[in-house]
Image (cartoon, rainbow, N blue to C red; front, side, top):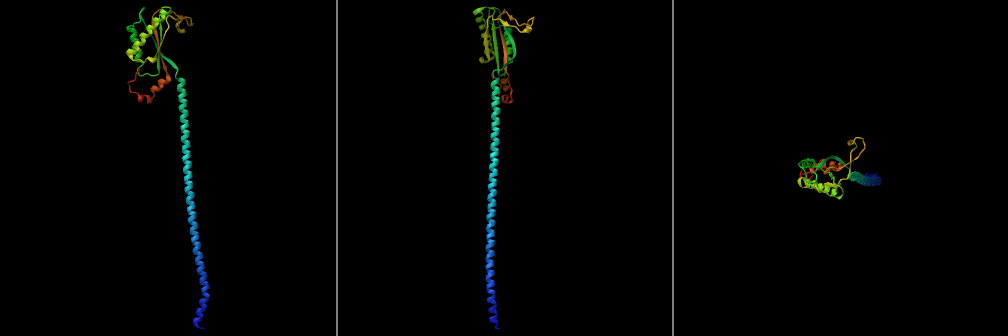
Length: 234
């Protein structure tokens, strides 16, 4: 057989095989590209899903923080309301700290040196004190309107001295003129354990220092102490 013819015959047999191999290469290349595309889309999907999950987690954390802040605010508000209620309920709760008797000479409303000394000592103990009032009861042995007017003058003398000499605020002074109204004695001052009215025999003003414990506690708190300038009036 002619070699040239043999070569041509072999080529005819190989051409279909080469064509098939070329097609297989194209298919493999396409499959590889498809796989690459699928992998790229999968990675993009995974990234998007992770990003969405991260955003959802951040949103959940932010919502949790806001919920906690709201809970804290509600708790603070409740505590504040409770504190206000406690303060309001205790505003008119006063208890006696001390008392003293300021005596006057018969027929006069002029303070004696002993009376002024008592008032000076009382006023000295009021420096820096908050949440207090002074209850004043003036008594006179005179009867009727004469006794009332006399006891009013006694109250005025004491109030004037405390205001002018010691700058006690007027709103802290609560006075009543009782004239010769009988005063109920303490049971311990009687001989038979029964409280008896005591007759008024002299001009006097009975003073009681009353303190509101809530106001006193607030004035003694560190915040109040830090804000104090030391120049407050009694």
